Image 1 (spheres, rainbow, N blue to C red):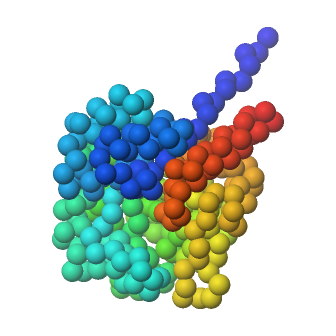
Image 2 (image 1 turned 120 degrees about the vertical axis):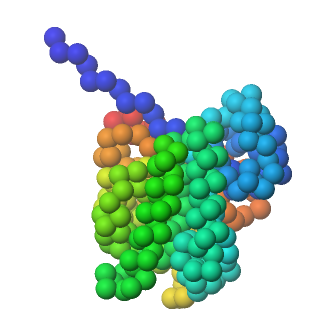
Length: 285
């Protein structure tokens, strides 16, 4: 008799630390417990600014919180308007590039100390045209950042949303770095007006290293922001999204992100319930 097919481990469901605006490692651990999750993607800038690395790891471990990935924010990023972030986002601004490369190297060392396998960030509006001279510059900068993390045995995930899927796919191919993948955020595609999340996920599946569970509504007019909403209240088709994600074959982490609203703990708990229900329904099929 043939052996039964091996069951794949369920995806890890966690939350993004910055969504909770923690004041300290203890505050973060408390809020994650209130959210009902036991895994976290950790913003690493607070550790660069003063949180003790060892204490942070110890506090989270004592609370039963597993560190799964990190997040890098670049200097000078201004999200006030779509135009301001287009001008200031990611590795694009020349004035901040030396500082941002140094930050990437420092964060890579932090990730290594924390044994994080993945760090995610926004590259920042990669040019669509192959003959755009800025494209070669940004790809070379991306290689430098990816290589800094690879030296620390850390993979990177580029956030989706600031460019069309086709542009991101071409950039990943031309980047030619196997440790570079995608942190797929369906809401960002809607917020920036850059495409439909489910078809984008299908196209990027081979590169997906992690997913941000976030929801949004498209902008009412070009040049404006869309609106981030609690998971389930926006335009992401979560049933189709999880069905598509399941085709990946392996289980990537699902990190709930909430960057708006006055009840982030409540919104994350609600998102956790939706995700767990979808995963249970998928496992039962």
